[in-house]
Length: 253
Length: 240
Image 1 (cartoon, rainbow over the protein chains, first blue to last red):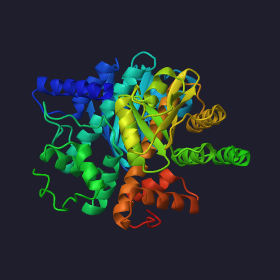
Image 2 (image 1 turned 90 degrees about the vertical axis):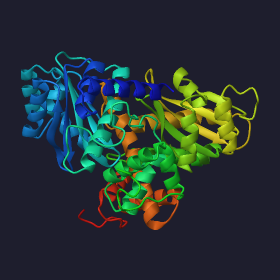
Image 3 (image 1 turned 135 degrees about the vertical axis):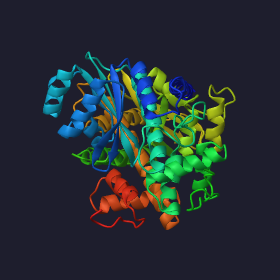
Image 4 (image 1 turned 60 degrees about the horizontal axis):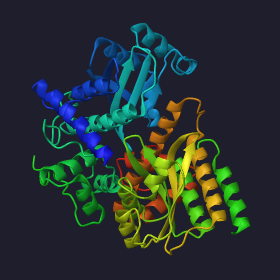
């Protein structure tokens, strides 16, 4: 299963990067791995509210910081579009007509910082949206297919990290929670199962929580029992298992 | 072949592809009509996720069971071979002990299928997905039926990618991810509604689709509003 091994490889790189800094895994480590994998010049992660990208959580360099802040300031740019479209925005050449037409202010400002290509990915699982991850290159050119695949897998990881840090209240750049410890289990998203999405929807009613929190609780339950996420989700969909609305009862943390 | 049904199907599909149509709803209609036209037992559309997986975008029934079959196809199966070759692949009898896909064949026969046909969805030289037809009885589909099936697969490709100009290859990747995320939104909404109303997933899907049609909304929008709503009331209270 190529996809699983690639996701595992990427998780290993993320954990290694965190360990080298003596920290728990956080979105900054995902940015660093994304930059290396996509041969990008820099990367950033911004958290999102229901209105759009909200504030910058992590940047790899000053240009990334400028690009991230610019979009918040201007209210336009790939970061906004990825959330609206629920899809990546791959602007391989900020010098082309389409970029100039789509984001007139952002394109001009971004190019003056030295960014010539911008790729942005929503941190999203269906209706759950926790932010965006963006990358830039100082020269134009598209992502290759393997690079695109890596970026999507890394966006999945960042989504989970943000959801779990949000679980505790204020979003933080340093990830907390199950599955985010160096050497811990990977976010387990690579092999997609419809039961995980269905179980997430069921848990919003069972627990009376948002979809993001339902997903985090599902993962916490699986982690605490050392079970695969897909198996726990399957039990919930088959109505063999219900989760208790009181957190801590089943999460064990 | 029922030629009236055939022409009616293409007219209906073309009618659906107006501005702002819902791609997942469209693909569901396509799989439903494929079953009716081609005497299949079930049909599904899978898309190639650049993460390295085949993902179910639509299926006629029991999506979970079908999804399981397609998951196995991430390892082996006619669908995977169809992707890799870009050509249609026939499994005329899955009970044949000489099948090149023993694991897939075992799961498919367990699910009640004996024949599978996988037809590529391609744009120029790139395969983006496949239309899969399943039959409960052994024996390959007729060549005339397969030409129609391929035409349906081509229509599915156009429907999926038509929203924007495809001069940029990047746009295709963007559209595919949007479609895959729509599928996830709908599965989350099915779960929430099934739990709320106490139905199974297929019935929850039917309720969502009926509501979208009756209120002239996109299925994905209905699903997203329902999942986002802090209440479990369905349809979600207006003004959310």
